[in-house]
Length: 65
Image (cartoon, rainbow, N blue to C red; front, side, top):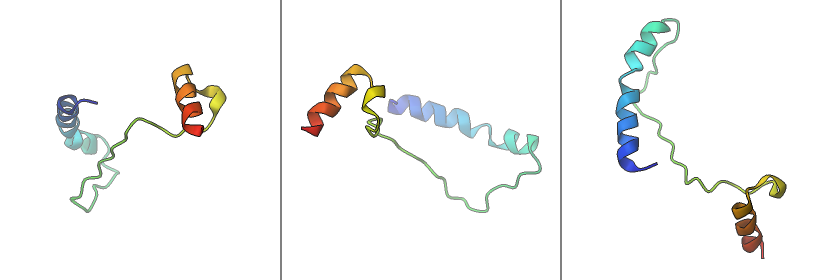
């Protein structure tokens, strides 16, 4: 995901926090101010060779050798 798209998405999501907790008053807010952000490279883990796309099969076969 491009950085500018990620920043826009982050701003959009951040606006909904208060509305979410007002809709769900039975849930408690986190007691920490820390934010958990996950980042993935999109490469994945090759596990089942028969379910891979053709280009991924070629790459997996090449890396196996």
